[in-house]
Image 1 (spheres, rainbow, N blue to C red):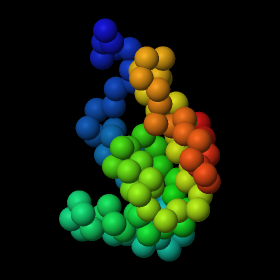
Image 2 (image 1 turned 180 degrees about the horizontal axis):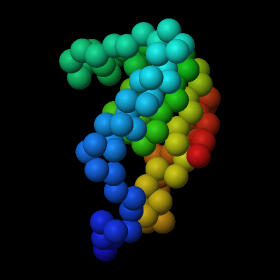
Image 3 (image 1 turned 120 degrees about the vertical axis):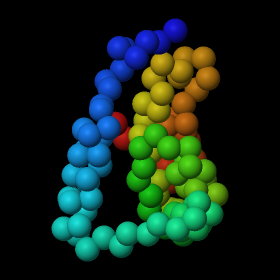
Length: 100
């Protein structure tokens, strides 16, 4: 059993600040922001030839069912579960690479 104290915890204020720091960073690079329905977001991600994402089953499924030639997934997906259930970050799909 894992307790809350076993993992880093961010308050809502810090979490928003952290998320906004990424938006500020990416705005420097003329990024196209897209947000629609869940279906639209999913199909939008499936169209990319290169995908990089952290732990997200939503993104993982979009990458698996999409047309990507290169996929970079965060390797240590859920370190506390990998011994018994495997890890979605450890794949051997063609064009998939782990990072982290």
